[in-house]
Image (cartoon, rainbow, N blue to C red; front, side, top):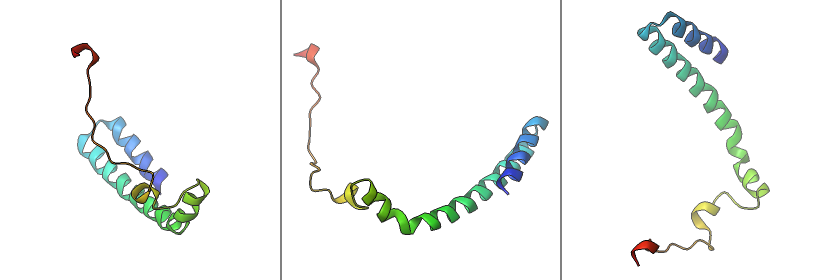
Amino acid sequence: NLETEINKVKEALKADNTEAIKLATEELTKAFYTVSEKLYQQGAPHEADAASNMGGSATDAAGDANVVDADYTVVDDEKK
């Protein structure tokens, strides 16, 4: 289905018809969302496994004890 929609966009681009390009692009976007939703649903149960394979957990980004939130000041060496 994605290939069909991609080909429709290509044909619309050849015709140089703005409305046809918009319509074909919208249809391609819908088809892409459908595919990406299915991929996301298939990948969701494996997120924790993927994170552990990379040496962390799924919550590392939000709850890592080694992360320090700090204020800083940018110093311009030329203005010293």
